[in-house]
Length: 237
Image (cartoon, rainbow, N blue to C red; front, side):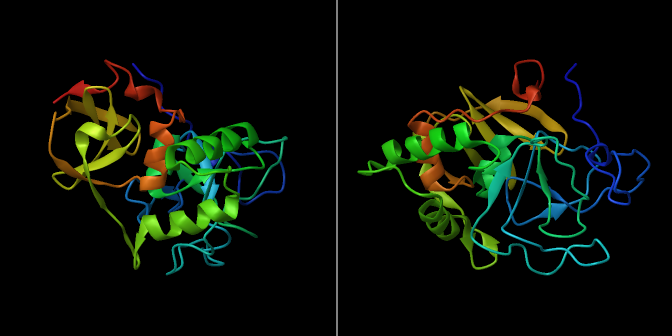
């Protein structure tokens, strides 16, 4: 059995300036799924956190109407230099992802502050995948990603051949999000990959992961998966 991620109230107690506490009963609406534009409440924390450039929550710790503050959508580690933050208090809005594969599908990139090694590797794979003469800066990647991840306020979908997609790409099948992993498609759920189905050998699918990130994945970037992705962690359909 795959261990569940810790609950979101184990990161930081938003009602205290001291160490994290565990008494909060209701999770905040701070989880992000592969479709990216949907923020929902769930008790599982996930493996990564991040933000969308600033604050998108109200003083009552509810989600505001807007879904981003800037084009800087990043994916961060849960713990960095022993810093403690009060979730959804002052400053940016903390968001949480099941794993890095989910964050990439939503259009977030690795953070250059808390994940510099991963961010540098990502930028280099971006360069190779898109055949650029130089490694892109963060702002250049953010500019392109903002165009690729959104269609107005909705998630942009990209029709691509499924046979050409690298592992860790998210696709839509029957209205649900599946991650490509080898010969399988893994169904995404809030607390892990719940089931798997065979990957079609041909055909076109709607892809959620922005094409520039797909290119970086194809060029060798290896994101961190939730442990439920392994064989046996997700049941076969």
